[in-house]
Image (cartoon, rainbow, N blue to C red):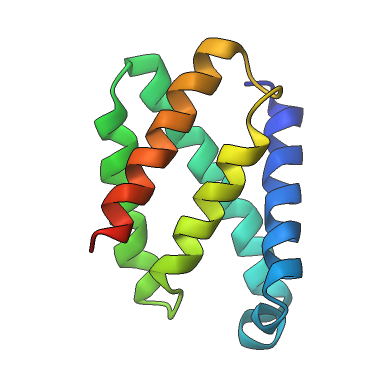
Length: 117
């Protein structure tokens, strides 16, 4: 994935989350917003690694670890699921077709795992 595209996706996803949940500004402030952008870069990095390895479990394991870290910081699992749904919606047209299909499947599987907890 092109680095500029990745930055744009991470930024737009963070903005859409904070627009949908304005209380996040009160809870986490500017620092939280910046962390959300960074987190989305990490999500995309892990999706790329999983794609390169052709191993969805790489991303599933990352998502479980992520949930442990973020819930310890008072970020609800539902926000992680929401974030991944936003990525599912933004990836089409921003990555090649094979990456898109694989990454969307990873995100969907991760959301299924997280929602079942």
